[in-house]
Length: 444
Image (cartoon, rainbow, N blue to C red; front, side, top):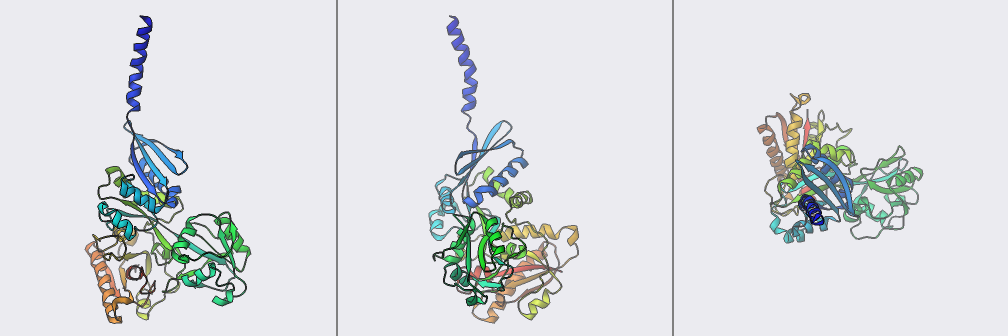
């Protein structure tokens, strides 16, 4: 009888534990890009959890490519699951319902959009979230006399077709340097520069620090690193051109995406994404989320004052307009139906520009900016058909943005179109219209 009583008592004590174990934690599943999964998204997720009241936040590593962030609020557990694979795999998991958010270092391509038609409008700022900026700097020794290269020249150099700097205006044999193994800088070079060409043999380094130290000792060396990599006093980045003007990777040029080897790091969700996953994505767009982005070393999209360039290229009218103004680190860009491979546009502005208009509004409302006037400068692509048509098109873009800013209560000194005279990309290339049709914002 005593043994039966003890058994019953043990059973009663076990029942609450069993009931507790059966309460599964809710999961926010974020899958995709290894670059984003490594540090960026976990840092933003932890900041989000703290700011919405979760406690006991801790990380777990249940597998080599999975990071889990465990937390609880009001006694209810939550797990943010961050699985590192690739942009393609992350998008497929979103399509298959195995993830609520996809991490991607690019926009979905046409085949992916077809496969994910049920996800909704992936050009919409309600589903496409530009989280941060990333990119590649091409670095040389400070004594190298060459100031700029085209992407075509860069491809020929790293493919071994240019072996002597004299072929591109320098002197001496070219010495190639690369970080060994798979890395985000190489992925972007593969996509944007090499385009299927094989790399020539190069001196390999364990990481970006080792590479820039080698370049500092090698006057004839050239290599590439992520924009997050500091380069020392004896190393400098090259200005690069993609069929348009050559642009150096300054903070202003990268944030405005004028620099050609810049890319956005995206989050994508379906039109039916849950409340928690949407809360995370929207938090990442705000100041606190962008502060977390910056703390990881990635370039955030926070609006910060620009700098007056030492010199401005372009026609005399353009240089005259901006002579006494400071540029803001943003270029507003537009949705073209199908042209940006992002589906059907729900807004005339692309998803980042929708957010940038909100950031711009908050920035202009700061006490330090009261009374300042805005210059709105529009640009067009040469495919408009004629110089006159390009000027009219750029004027239309500038007027659109100017009216938007005036409706928000800001003073616009000038809204002017410059036509196609300051291109960033060669007309006829896949991204030319998207990159060239833009609007710059300057402050007087």
